[in-house]
Amino acid sequence: MPNVDPKENQVEIAVDEKIFPRPVSVAAAYRFLDRCYVRLARGAKGHLRVTLKDKAKASKARLEALADAFENELLQQLMRQQIATRTEGLREVLVGRALLSAEPVENFGSGQGQAGGAEDLDYLDDPLGIAVPWEEKYGDDQGEDEQSS
Image 1: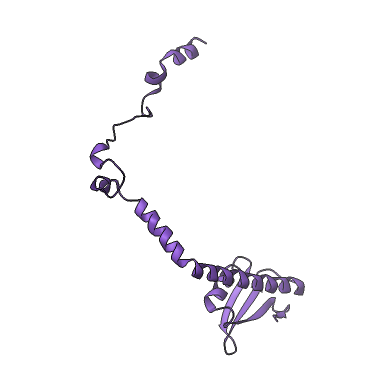
Image 2: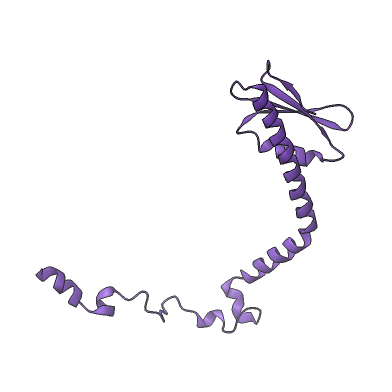
């Protein structure tokens, strides 16, 4: 249960580190830096003491809502950590594949990449005609119509 102190404009929450490991509590506290001042300290054995002090004068109800929001954020950060742990292998595979697919062009001709080697590539090739000036591509008729108007 949070300890609300309206005189000090703060609420103190004891977080059980057996349920919420310290990195989870720190991540949750970080999310509150824009709303309030945050202080972390060692509490009773196995607990982390989190003090949230509102930046503006707050009512008791506002401080209780701040404590409730912090406890919800603890749950969210715990779930994030658990999901990250469960999907670590999958993320490593995906990043590995992404890095392999970003192989430099120089290695394409070595049989490791796509068909065709680096010797087939030329920066002057323009099969789509992207680098062709407007006048060459469509003629100069458009410019003459604008001048005669």
